[in-house]
Image (cartoon, rainbow, N blue to C red; front, side, top):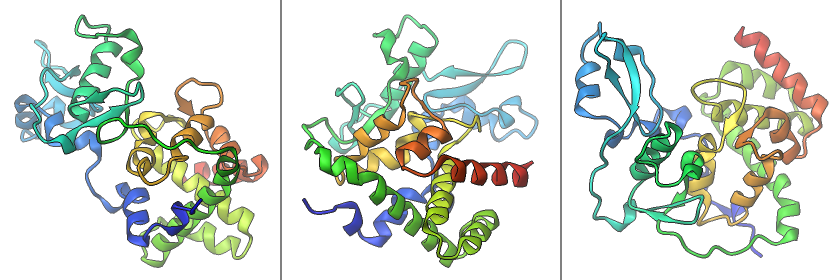
Length: 266
């Protein structure tokens, strides 16, 4: 079978994996995730909501005491465009990502609006209505870690060439020279750190894997089972160790890179 990832156009690969680094909107920042109250609050420099971060499906609201708190969004825009539809991890088609985020929030809060307690782990699996995807063969899955390692490395190299890579990782790449094990380890840590969004809790949630899962589902049918496999203990979080195991990177090498990064960030 044709190696889809290896043959993706360079600009598409960059758009998928370095979207957040280029300052483009994150899905959590879509306009329909904010209500009028939150928009008005952000215009007031003294507002408690100014410094309050609310994840997808939540908006900032002031309590009676004037304190900022994140609450589930009450309504999502009515979507008529089929292109707004998304497929969830429960293989159900939803009208928009907003609807999924709102439902997950309600279930996390044990709200009466939650239609299924299991939806506390609800997330967007890929863009578009649900369809039957081609099954990833054993041979394709066995070769996928190598392809993923090389892909991440090439994206990281492209960023370095464009002077868009952080000084820390650029120095790590230069120091590794032609040691591919080191270079792969650098790329793995770089991407894992990039995915570990707010809060930076040293673990990547299933939701945080969205930027490399959802956009590729139609192009690469092995990406979903591969990422599912990374969550070895099925706790809906991927640690750096699990990420390294998935990419078949020596544990000691991965730990060295992580220790170096922590020292620089502290």
